[in-house]
Length: 100
Image 1 (cartoon, rainbow, N blue to C red):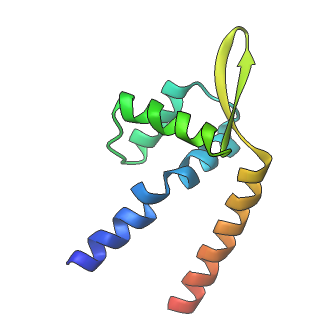
Image 2: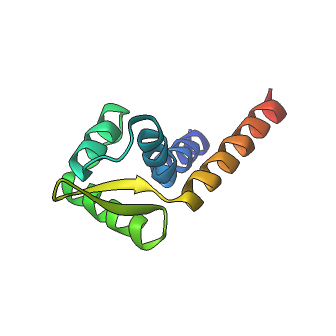
């Protein structure tokens, strides 16, 4: 069914920022490769190239910040992203209540 496929694309691939922020909230700042591996573990077919492009876009959009640790670049969620993540979770919970 097309409607279900659109739903899966929208809630999943269309909102990868939610998954990335969730991963970083649980695990703390991570290298790009570790984030990509976590996305793959969650079932997303993310190539390395697309993963790094995604992370760079998220930095440009203010979702992620790059931090240096031991001379290596790590990614962490911005304060604004954490606030928006919490709002998104509340909206998803409201949606679930409305649909149940």
